[in-house]
Image (cartoon, rainbow over all chains, first blue to last red; front, side, top):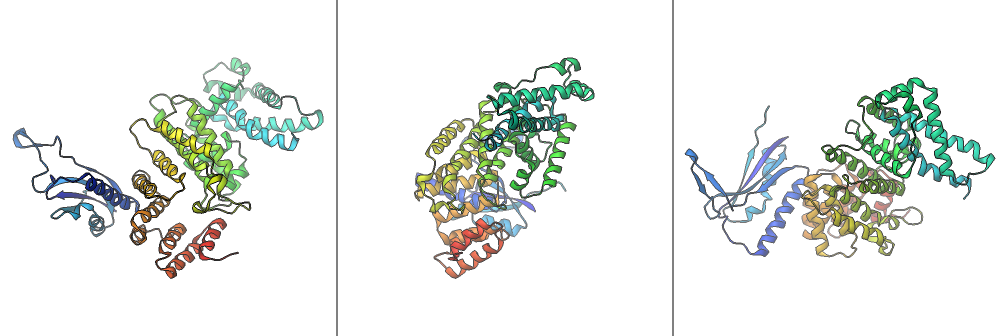
Length: 114
Length: 409
């Protein structure tokens, strides 16, 4: 069994959602993760808030951001167990982030020691 | 009270106290001696009382006899006394004459310390549960074998190995130190949780419900909560969970011991005092930042104390199962989560979720699928219930499925 990271990318993370939309999005995400956990395939994961984010550049230059309004920001990731990349892709297909136009979930295998 | 009732009653309440105190006195390496002396004490009662009458205070009589037997044993077995004294770093002569304290306070402390010793991580979890039943609940080997659907030899072997481990690891019968309490408490809570669950609903043994196991688990958990440092949020959450679940024990079986499913239970038989107790302890558990599996399960159990089928109830249950599965996966939690999912998202969506669970060896998986297909495709529902019937391991489960199939026996 391999582990895969499912990385959620937002086309426009700065979009302002209504509290109702946020509530619904939160529940959908929890159901998505709960469904994976119910198959005993969930490893871990987290959202990545934009507030207080920093980017460290070469030469140790530090800038604020990324801000949600730039293209292609990472909103969070989860790690799952899967027999194959196809199975991991099936998990990714259920991600509520994909309801947003232009959003993507990137599936990447996690390297192992052996 | 008749003698036939008195002895089993005293055995239930006093055997474990004598074992705990003597075990504590001799050290964890000599639990077998403590058990033998406690058994001898009851044998002495049986030899004496029928002829001389039952003493005015039978408990005090038992304690006095146990104390004498222990002191005699120490005098007669010099080798044993030296060994014990040496292990406990005491002078053999002093130790031989030292007071065996059967006061209420020392009994409670000894039992609590014994609970931590018995749940030592070096001992396998099934052996921890078995040892707890023997040493802390005074269960006989037969009873433990019945409770875990195994034979006496297996139980004896398991307990023997566990006692050997206590000896080899030189586990002290004491309260774990500050730095250790958290990790040690975790295995104590696991054992208490398993003990309760085994009594609340067994998937593999008849009768499927054993209230005595639940009561013992609750008694030990209450004992744990009385002690300062072990009174953690997790322990409170576990006690809340037990209280909520136990509130329905009286409503889960009919007069002939048949299981009554949740939706068919008479909620006026639910124990309101236990529900209130659960709420009180869940409140006490709500400190700290860690959301343990016991918190989540207690939360789920709380929502089940509200019979009315509201969207709010099932949304909360689904939310809690989603979290529970992330901290503690189990097939039964996965199936229950899917049932809650159906209450919010409908049966078709839940069937898709269920089919991903890959639990095709589990009878409850097919019961769930049967339930979800009912009303959508009754032929499919019937096929799933039949498959469940084939896989069911207890008569109680079979009867429930037969009812769903409309088969009356």
